[in-house]
Image (tube, rainbow, N blue to C red; front, side, top):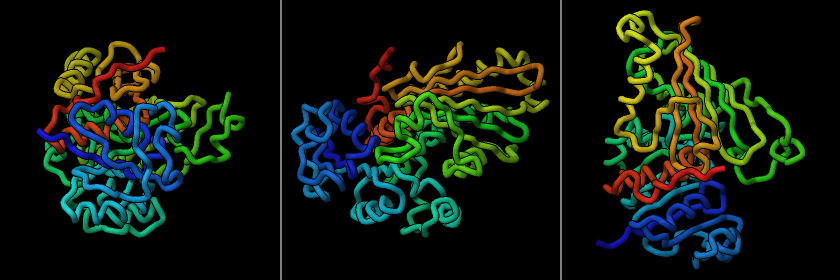
Length: 346
């Protein structure tokens, strides 16, 4: 059977280049074209020497026929690129925020632009495989989740789906600097962020409505959520700590909550190859460079609250790896194909 020809639009960003790294070793696809706004005409291996095996030249647009496209463009620009590709019948995974929110007015409020193609919002599938595996398999356009929502939702989903949560949710997340992208900014300058931990977007982060949207699909008992991100002086990784009150009814039905909640989480993710429910608190180092998410639920009987920790690599499970996982499902391949490499340690 012929291998699938894929293209990466905007390969020069962190998610784009990690897509190239993963896809170069994927057994079922060939990278036929890569584009980039800042390095047109250069060999991919010149711009990124760690990809020395590549003979690809960065183009200013798709110059050859392909079967599948990844867009790693910024928001708004990505939707404008994806719309004609979907119209041509190509399958597309969009790594931007453009198709994650179903409400175009909410998108406008958070991203300060009018959505370029709102007609596609209803057919786009939110690409968190652990929640939407079946829909992704039949989709033409998949919205790859944000990195923070991936970690937070994987921590929260079993508790929400099983009716454990009663009331508000608090999410405290800490991310490596690569989450800010490859463009230079003062806040990600080494001298500014090294040896410092900084909370940011304290009045509301763009990923918050995405998390809220998916939480409310999982449970109607969530009143609201508070999400606070932090910048940590490391390159990769997100550690999320999620706090929620467990309903009295759930406590009565679950028996021993310490054991019962852990068992419920393991059962929920029994068919999810990239989520591992851990017996000890996870660290970002435990998933570095991999498509795995480590989740650790812990019930606190003193407060009646559930604490759930999750750790992901923001550029893999929170970005390029998840995009390839979605591609695998859309093409009818094994979900783990090309993604089963273990984390790098230390």
